[in-house]
Image (tube, rainbow, N blue to C red; front, side, top):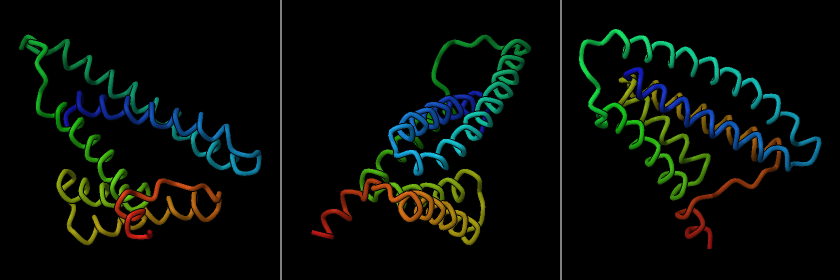
Length: 152
């Protein structure tokens, strides 16, 4: 993934983490401990990654011989497409299953990992989400349109 696309994704990630932190403040005092602890460390890590990515991107832009014409590059559009896919799979399949599916797809088609590694990583992500939010914190996550229809 190119540096500009990585910076765009990291900005989106920072916004999502801030949203999770703001949402966690509304939980009861016992339930919000873990999301706030994890969220603060995740936000700090994402901000460090963002500053590193911005430094690399600005350095490359300053040293580039080509002039930037302001057009959207494929790498930038690819990040936007993956974010739209995330919204779609979460809407259809729910947060836990949708995030797991997106993780599998991203690891297989972008990171070029083998199917076994991508499936294992997706299962771990979905399992951690389910264990943390549904089981431990008893938070009702979006179940997904398809699962809501099937469960009626």
